[in-house]
Length: 131
Image 1 (cartoon, rainbow, N blue to C red):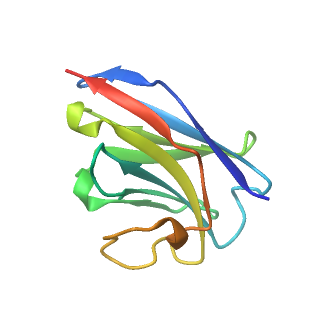
Image 2: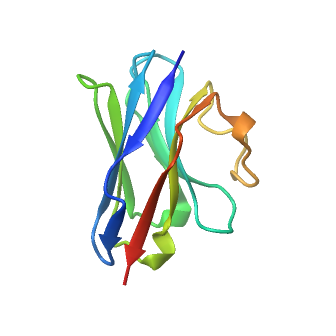
């Protein structure tokens, strides 16, 4: 059974870079055809896909984040990380790491995402950005 656990700082200041790590168990993140993404949900708003990294190390990022997001991984720890630069209070959200087999997204643009669009989810990690 695949398990994903998010970790990182729960508070950051504006203009800093937020880095969150997802630790995966039950399957190697290098598994072919697996796509590992980050999704966030600001308070009272819809799920937003941020991008992610594939088993073969290709990265994908959301154009709506305008170049602020990047991804990395540590295969020795079976972890992947999102880095979001120049954060503002609008980046306050619950952040989820997720797994999808096959295509990285169920549809494009990735509107109206649902939990069953992805094969596994982390529990979510709340981050507050202060001004």
